[in-house]
Image (cartoon, rainbow, N blue to C red; front, side, top):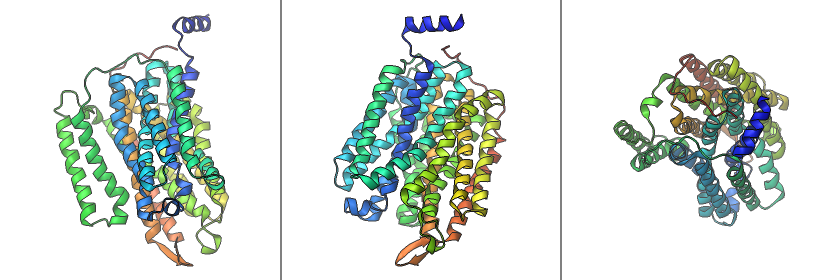
Length: 480
């Protein structure tokens, strides 16, 4: 009888079924995450393709991380104020524009601009999670959030073989046309399937706060991502670091006094939110550490003593196993979140990450060793990324879900950016010349794994500081 009443109500309100809403939001999450690995197979060829130096072409990757980190918390606040669905569609339109600009460009400037615009779409994941909180019943919410969170790892891991295949068999511009097509499909699906917002947070956009956050984060992330190239203690690096810190301190002072702040730092300082966000840095570091080290370990020639000799596509398939695991275990993550709570799930996820890197530290001489490690990373990231937004949503008011999850995504971005810079610096500094080419040594990979283990252990310890039962101003979710 209850199911019949639900179906009748849906016909009257013309509200799509929950499964369709979740599927559409998960699809746009996959598209967003795919942008981070879109050009990975092309990195070695970019200097020749764009007729630019390797230092300049590295911005094709760096600019996406920078824009993602800055835009995500801002888009979360805009979603809380003006409607999450509207902002998701706007971000997908920006993705389309950036993809088209990059697709028609033959110079590095156009590609960098396009890649920067692509990075803005990262905000669709925390916004999608906030939409789910608004429209799903509690018994469905955990599994849906786990699936949406998994897309952050799945899209990058599974998308890598697709990008590798296209890069090897078609003109590189087709990568960006594919991204544009995905953006068009995603925008249309969101427009027709996702319901309009039922909960808005009145106020105005804190323009000064948005600009301050953008400047401060840009300074910090420039130091993290470019410090190895510029020199960690060079004047320009230290200027970026110190300037970024000073701006963020002034920004925090302003946010605590603003009438309608971009982010409510008092909410962000709650133990559940604070410790979860700090642990998010470690988990972002652990995830991207494997994305940097594993492909190189798999692809380097066997005769160098460092690699396993796979081609780019085969290596991408190995790395993709972690993404497949994340997707498969998302229903289990939702079940565990409902039965034991998100904090124990987070603890188990961080422990799996530590185990993965300990395993590959001890055994990394065969391809199957890397597959096992990737499977464990899939479990660890899948559980952790499912737990973090649920912990935060239990600790913040419903009208701040978008901004708070956007802040959590920002901390993950800081972790991934840091891993990219640190791992790249370690592998570059601990290398030997083989036929005129710098090849990372086995010691370089082992040191990288130790760093990832340290990040995982820190995240594991932080999970025990998260309160078991955080409380917030709860609003009953709409029944589906």
